[in-house]
Length: 137
Image (cartoon, rainbow, N blue to C red; front, top):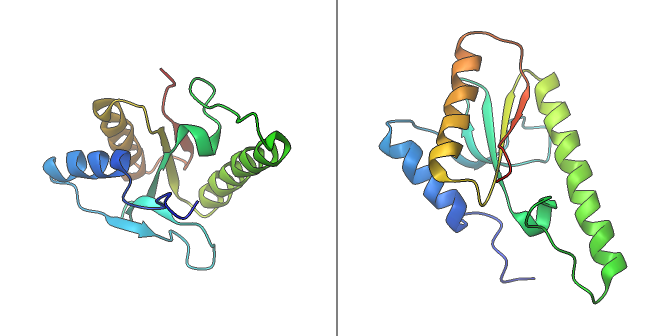
């Protein structure tokens, strides 16, 4: 477990690189709300947009997530807990006025950038905050 990265994963780095090439500037691995112990992978503080890049295994992707055969009860509980925490994070951030963008690690980078830009546009046009989930391919 120690070898599993919690930040700077390949999907995160690819997304950050693509966003940076487009001239977007952001914070990395930061808390959107200081009192909430949740860290966004990419954070646009001025626009109040929090971006999370979810791993298929750890966050229970319906297309690519899998359950190990050994110690299955533990892993089912762990992954279901992660999914509940993700939903709670989305709800709490939206209540605080944040747009939440969630993309799966397998989402094509071009699609992920479009979703982030959508979140930024909605925030800048003063629409009601919401959570945006990337399409599963």
